[in-house]
Length: 613
Image (cartoon, rainbow, N blue to C red):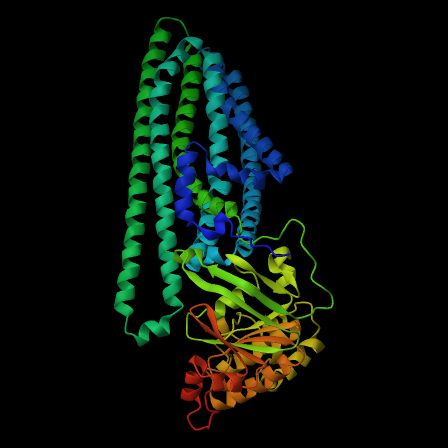
């Protein structure tokens, strides 16, 4: 059973997404990230077929207009046949109606398809983020990830709605117009072979540059968003330290970086658009000269020249529009690339291929068997070294030590937020690496020192422990945690909004709400980070009563900052720099002397403590 499994490369050596993206681009410089959107699009094939159908109808109708114009000149104007003029005029109106119908249908189905793909992509990225391990979030700020989830997806929306639709229409128009130019007059179409490469080459060159600059723009925007999220979430701290000007300067610098990146991108895009406009106009002048010569030589008719020039104009406009669309798509490619990096990031913590089932009913035991661990984000500096202890069913074990001693890391390892470097962590006698992580974490209820309260109602926050719980079960947990009494005094009772991060509640109320959540989960093992250290005397008394009810009949691991709260613990583990330096009851550790005795002497000055041995 014992497996000294080391962490995977992705977990032990985490990589920032931006660095990973640069490596990906070096390995696959010609691969368009936007292709990764195809699976999301192809899920809705009937909508894609509808878009293509309406696109072909509108494009075919548009391509029919020059042919009608050519016939109108040769068989109407030149022959002065007013009936022919009327017939071709009515035909043009019918074709215009068909073109309008096709354009409306294409726009509608493309827009619906784009919104559907946008929703699926956002959900896919969010779901994948929830699967990623703690190391990933150690390396990335929430504001940056939020920028990718929201800003980048919105950028892609533009491509899937208007830009991609325009690109498809112009591609069909360009191919159709060039083909019909050859059919109309192969002689005049020879000019395309000369001017075509001169127009296409700059587009390809500038497109690559534009993609790099688009990526830089999205990265700087994400950095600015991350900084703003961090600062706005700590406004009281900023005001307390009078750091408004400094934070404003930091944000201003990031905003300026974003501006400069966007200016650089716009210069490249403007150069591309201007160059394309000049080249397209020059090409049309060449065609006019060549076509006029052909008419004078009797090679083509005036109607054929008109028809050819209209096709040439359509092709020129399509090519110019495609250069603009290409610029937008390069921006989209940069945004897509950032999202793809998230989707391609594999979780460092995964369920084993054949997970071992935990015993039922739960035993509620925990054992650390010579565990060593180092965070990959801290240059592999050991945080825990050869840690060995066990917690029996129904017992309460307290973890004591200075900040950085490894107490919180123990909580993280027992829930397998990280994998140990060596040794093994066993829950109910099973190595946690052999168990499905979700099944493992159902065995724990965690009450933090500063509990996470979500922006919703009191009922929603308590039901977070067990979403399917009935109101009767919720109310019972609330009464046991001493939440029910203060809820009755609120205007909307359990439906009262608590505000973002529970700003509408006091510290003691938030702690009791977190305890009610843990009671509702009804897990066999409790993980308690000292929940009373920042409370006033009355709030502390109420929380202690609620905690006592929560701990009844459960195995409990407690991180202790105040020794008074763990004097009755069955065992106290004293940690220093990740190593176990003492273990025993409160009285035993005081008698032994050492680190714990020193702490006890400081915190219990008014009491007579047992003499050290």
